[in-house]
Length: 399
Ligand code: FAD
Ligand code: UDP
Image (cartoon, rainbow, N blue to C red):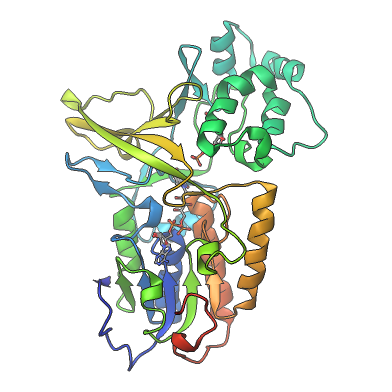
């Protein structure tokens, strides 16, 4: 991977235009850059405004030497063999199945809600079949689960909804579950067995040497140049390119001309504590706090990474409205606004919009990789476009 901070003079910029300018070095941008360079023989410039690759999946060793995720815990899971096999070209894996406990009524109980959650919460000894009847008894069925409240009360009733979901969701999104699409809380299933894994996907594993190493390996191709610490607007008019892959916030690309799309942000508080003999503070990777504190959850990284160390690093997540855009906010008004940007994006034949921020979709990493692989297949089928100076383009970003 060739990286450089200042473009001018760009390497061979005038002699050899880039085939593709990729904006953002997260999963969306990096996968497309890798595919275009290695499979289509393209010259690719990746421009990333942060000083590192990996987007929000970036990891690094903190001052104590513990491998942490500065932008919050990232656990890889997928049902797609295509995605898993693709990424396996760039990393070996450490099998890891994530478990989460929720602090409710003075107990730490499994979430997703399962047989043990209900039995321990209410002091019962139900079997799985009896739990099904229990859920039938308490669930408030609606014809169509439209909101995040409908989904949960429709499955497990109001008491479990209020104890496990209502407070967490209000903190995380600054909205009541009744104001959010069903898809948000539907991410968390309900189980009548004792399976306490957070995910049940076929492939659940962490990159053995971390995400950043995976990205470095992906981008390490002689035809890929990576420019860090640079907003694409600084170079879009000076570097010739034929096609752009844009993975930043879609409304930002259009200078917010239809209004700002809301993204939820987080403040991360990282702490490192002594862990003599390599002990762990938490019994599981993440502890959720639906009802107390301003933070939603606490994650202890060594559970995820398997790293042995005499210290342990944890991250507390404090949701907030302002700051880096981390989550699109799935609700009808935002989807309507997004559609206006999407319609404009579709008019630009020389720009492809992909990734969580550019698609305004609550995608996990594997979904972004899958989206990028499909985009590559579509792009690879297109006839080559003539090179042109971006300064003459219709892009609103060009001053
Ligand atoms: P990003 O990773 O956001 O990359 C976009 C990049 O574009 C950024 O690096 C940004 O700096 C850059 N950029 C934006 N604008 C510009 C510009 N103008 N010029 C230059 N560069 C620009 N997924 C999972 O599968 N499992 C998890 O456990 C998980 N946990 C998560 C926890 C948190 C707290 C968050 C926020 C997300 C989590 N995700 C998880 C989701 C995961 O982070 C995303 O699916 C994935 O990283 C999205 O990749 P992307 O390339 O679309 O976007
Ligand atoms: N959620 C909740 N209580 C929990 C866990 C999740 O209310 O203990 C809700 C909350 O609205 C959250 C959503 O379910 O934002 C999705 O949870 P997930 O763990 O998938 O969130 P992410 O890891 O993407 O932040």
